[in-house]
Length: 344
Image (cartoon, rainbow, N blue to C red):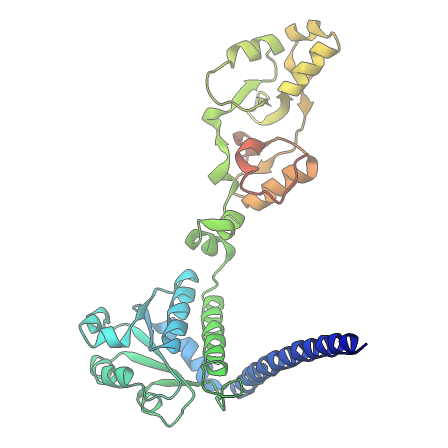
């Protein structure tokens, strides 16, 4: 019985420990949420001015910081660049040893420092001032050296870090990151940065694939089988035999050159199965699929592939504005790119 009580106490003790950990985690999250709320409520005209300064920058936006603030600065620079604003990371320590030569007169410089007294940053400020660079400060100290030297001060409204010790950069770096994200996104919004622009700067990876165009992945017309709808089934297949990779479908066109029909290898097999060999010497228009599903050149790749998955089709003709075929999406080329979609 005593052993049972000990086990029960051990289970309760373990549960208490888990609950304490969850409570501690929630306290950290609450402290960081409150830090963001303070900054949100304190956002003022300085933010609008910072947006204006970045938009007016004739050169690049250089972003700098030391330590954890430097990591935030590097991320901010990457965000700006991916959203259409030329930007580079500037390491203040390296800047003191020659990298200040990277800064041109038309550049704007965004510096991140919680205290505003980071030694490396303080030492590069006179050079930036002499050169006439616009300096934007992201800081928690409006009375610090950085704030006094900056043209615009973005106050993160810092009070304390999260956690019992309150030493590790947590609430401060989160606030810096959020302020940087807000600045980058509002600037891109002001520039009318659109999906097409985003796709141009993100050609690789899942995001780039999502925003790419069907033209980037379709088989061009030179690799497709195309024939006039007036030709016979037999002549079409004899004329369009070619070595190497080929699509399993033939795009058929009318007298105006526009896509009028579609005939697949499966259609050919059905003619054999139904004993319709006599159709081989008749016009392919009699057995083709009329007005097949197609997409316009220039649409997003994701839209084209989703259409293929929804309609359970293996080939999708791509046509130009006039309705003339320019290529074809083939399931064998895209299934590996979009594994989440089912074509069965």
